[in-house]
Length: 605
Image 1: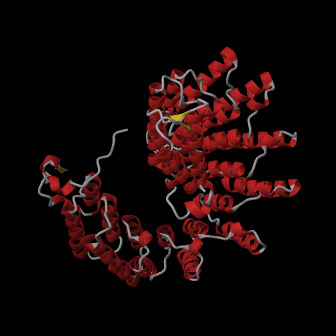
Image 2: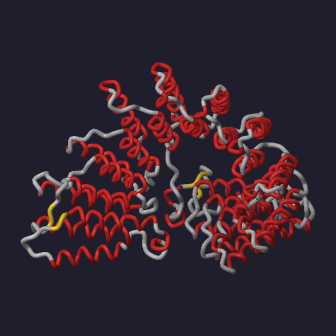
Image 3: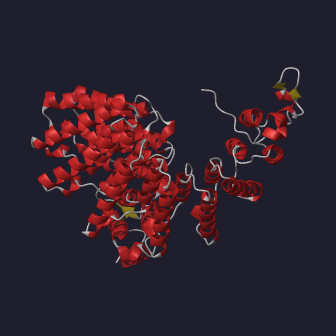
């Protein structure tokens, strides 16, 4: 129908003589028809999303050109504005339109302003809806300059005698939240928008600083790296609560979005006080909901934010508190018959992460919760199917447990991940973190063949990489983990011999690999591991000299490497050409610059 309508429109333009005019409302209807293609899957799944708005924009501009030639008239002056809004709305629906959608939307707004001026300010005047659509497109773009562009649009509205509404301010604030460059923008600039709204409300109540606007401001602080963001979030919450208490206006009532934003900010604080604050807010939300304030209903995301605070803070009672929250969620879900409170995979993931980060042996607890996940999955909760992240958390629990069989048990979990994936479970795709954690779990083991075991695990990973899994590309982190395991060899000669063999393999990887880029810490770890593995001094110094030569060739020799050489290989240290035997110090200004050409200079705090 949109194609047919376009054809008829173009035929009308050709058949009607120059002495007659076409009603622009007809063109407006055709543009509307094209703008509806975004709702037709049969079309947009086979065409670029831009197919619809670009075609509509082409007809729009053709119509406006015909208007300037006197061949089209607008009986209703708002028809031209509606045409522009149809196209602007299409761009605003492109949630992944990015920079392209934003630039085309801004260009269309510029064209609209130009046509408005050229018409003697009769038609194509941008209205409240036009600016709202442009702001939404900017907000969805996620570009680095989205927030700056949004602020300029707010200022531009005034030139057309329009005062921004709540939706305009909110779209500008969300532009910050979705911006790819938010770390370079002070969240105080977002709060300045809130301040403008508050001042307008104080002056004439033309707009309200409602809960959504406060929530956006709190979220801006939560996404910043400011150490005071959590304090600011709590202050804003108290401010909104006071506003609601003073006015009784439901628009000012803090809802679960506002509370959730505050909890998100607090969870990133990393202090024990943040856990206490999170628990107090959760208690308040439950109390308010139980007293029939349904807009503050805590859901699973609310409880998960509190768990995140525990995970980051690691309080002494963290594990007990995390388990208490899980039970609290289950009890509340059953008593209220509300599945939105029931723990999901993310909740279980954070719980297992807490167990894996806590000091002590929490393997049994981790296995208990993993078993519960599996049982719930079997009973029909399909979202609770254990995946790689869950299993890796269990592997980390083995690693931190200090058990002698930790490596062996961790490898069994890794084998399960590989088997599940090979049998078609894409949620169990092995990643480099699973392999690295399994290798770390062997670290403190006294098994004579642990070095051989971790090298075999590494070879398995490399084989998958060679077979096309590019996410498993070896890196310096996993190689350093292998070196660390070898640096804790067993006391038996056989164990030390195996460890040395693997360390030499690691050294060969560092020399020949095209994608492993070691740093000075890798070199130091290798030097220290050799010290605990090689018993013959002559052999130790010979290999140590080779490692130091590798460090110099790769330009990684920094103060850390030199200090390791001084402590563990004093004879090599004293043979350096810039060593001053009289003072026992190095003349660093005489060290060849190429020896440290790839050293990262540490920033001074």
